Image (cartoon, rainbow, N blue to C red; front, side, top):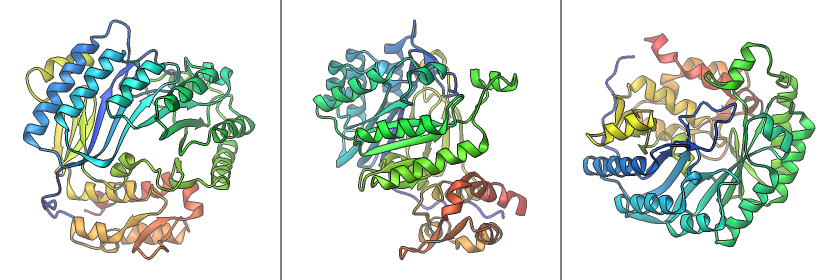
Length: 397
């Protein structure tokens, strides 16, 4: 398939991702673009971020901003004065916010005292996602986390005290030495908090991590595949039983509390990406920023700090649409596919649709919207489904 990309002008971006790459330490499973905070030029980095935002909006003005997500690293390692400078910078370059903007910031328990939480709220943050991962202190130590469960409760209490109630926590399963019973306990303690949103991810052993090194030496005691599958089924049953909708493979929310920023990604919509190593997607073009802190700072002083920028080929955009769209349990919308690409999804992906439907892994949506979604069985084997669409068009071509 060699048709030129659809160059229909889209709306101005309405979503912003900003990367704060600093951490107190590097977790054993983490391959994100992050650096231990000690001796880092934090204010130089925040000024470089300010310049990147200024240069970007001069070229590509924003629409009304509906979501901002600050990730990392650990954004909450910023000191209160650094946090205030950063949030003022964001507001300066993106002054036009929707009335119901979702402004999320990732946080680690233990890096968010009452003062910092107040600075965050005053700066516009209205949603905080805490990286809890587990409720067993021993397990937290074994994966390189520096917080304990007391820090979790204290951090959540501080958030509530300053009026931040739209909160989420991350948990992980499939961790070394983790049992189904341990996950069950973590889910119980998480649900006791009564939060509006939970993200629960399976461990992936990524390259350039301590866990990868141990895995290659056969020294990483991971749960069996059967136990990991039992963990996933358990968490789905527990969350559903407490009234949480599984709206994406790894995410559960009370009605109306889904992460609107992440849905931007899953609907393949445009978003700005700022900071070292950040990715952005605007006007059919993806960009990747320079990764290192000092190289990023230096590059931003001379222009946009791009490592790479490229137009996404139409075939790749179609595959991305299917892969991310099927992550949402409501499924992908055939109408949006036709609107974006000018052809029907069945015309482009007849073979994988037929194959995955035949295996009982995907099915047609049943909510009055034309499209496809993962079946109950397909949810358990999502990666196999997504893989069926990736590379399909290049092979066909």
